[in-house]
Image (cartoon, rainbow, N blue to C red):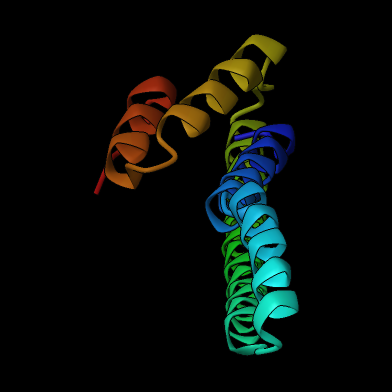
Length: 140
């Protein structure tokens, strides 16, 4: 996963939350107009007060949902960083082992390794088997 994908995913989640939370804006405008008319006619603010309380509660709920989405996004970024660290650590181990055998990891092999890591993102066992197969290590 690239960071651009994660940012785009986060933006879509926030947009969806906004849409779910603010669908009522045209309806609220109409209700406010009706409420103002009723208030002017009856001099009672009960309807308008209830409407304003609902709007305030919706705003608080929206902010809470945004905080949750931001936390999830931050966790995804941390996971990605952890995986990148593990990738670099594994790459260094492989290069060290190959250097001991007086072999260098070619750029093609690096690309293939990166592709394997990206594909094995959610399945570490599969990634381990493929690395063992690719570089001739014992899997255990």
